[in-house]
Length: 448
Image (tube, helix red, strand yellow):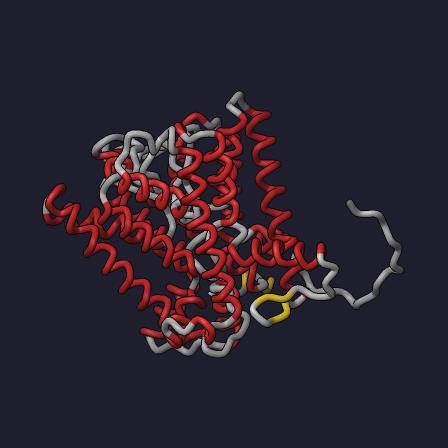
């Protein structure tokens, strides 16, 4: 395990950050091999690095078309990076140790619990088994459903491969696709009216974005919502509001735009997909660059929020948004505490939510500032790109391929911070043992 380097002992967060760094470096090296490209030549370093980062951080932003630029070997490397990046390398490592019947110590269990965002060490190994086995089952079912459409279209073996690739990419909220064989960078626009493909991808994206703790509650309690832990209740409630509310708003914004001329069924599929995919899958069934200003702003908001803690998705997370909204409402009502579903939220959760929200917004702001200072691009396109990167979404208006090397490095850093966790990334750099607790005198200031 990555616990020591020389004589230095790494913290849990630093181990996770270092693990992703090593995975990206290894992926970059493999993608630079001549056998990784369709033309049999070495990919440029910046192309390999951004692709490896995007796959490891389950984002989907690319400089080249995945389906036509990379060979089968290169695509399999990308697929493995997506799978390991989505589950977390610690989940994969733990399963290998379990299969080899190796002893897993307390230190490793602590890192594992940090990796999958659970607060307690007890039961973490059983949860890991559930995560890995559940992932295999869900992706297999998704691939089987997609094969109904892809096998007749692409042939048996290619159709099965396409089905598996897109099922893994959707479940891990990665957004990588191979549909460039039809038209480069087309994503899933060729299936905008296909209910089977749309609903399968939406289900995979949503399940992957709910988080592993929600899975555990559903497995143990079925549909008995009242018995779920508070975390699961908040995740499911916020996810439902964002999905249904987002779909309704997309319809209102696009009824005379992208939805015009489509049948009622296709309109429903379009707005539903547009509400789910930005959190944080990266697929699109409509031309993202053609979105209205209202839809563009709504998409940025959904990309900022992302999925839920302990999931394959990025963003500030649904629980962060919920905690901030509830705390703000409680403040307006002069409440002494923040309450929901008969429970009081702890102050630590509120403080962390504020840190995550502020850090992500700050990273997006400074990232956009650097990109706009480096080259002339449309303001809305740059904002869309940085929110897509920090939220590990992968949607783009098409400017990714226009980015200069400096701008590409900004996007790479944002994707890395978004996957490791913006606050976790800061802790990985700055975390040290806390000194003796000495507090300064209090003095009031005026706020707002």
